[in-house]
Image (cartoon, rainbow, N blue to C red; front, side):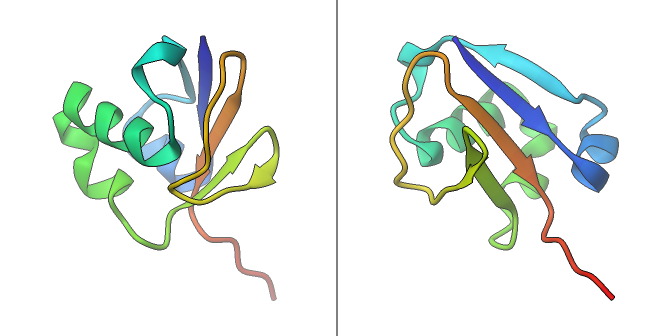
Length: 82
């Protein structure tokens, strides 16, 4: 099982903070994004944003990052400071 987390404004816009997904459905971050957008069509615009950040097990990851059973995947908007 993959644990998928959503943070900050993304969480507010999606209306959910986390969900579980069978790990056999997604081998990479890119596949996970596609599955989430297919399962939740209203999320497509938010999850397809190129500036959206993703971390796997608390390490920044890219679309080709491999996923394994038990992984925690977090999606969050870019962080800025001041």
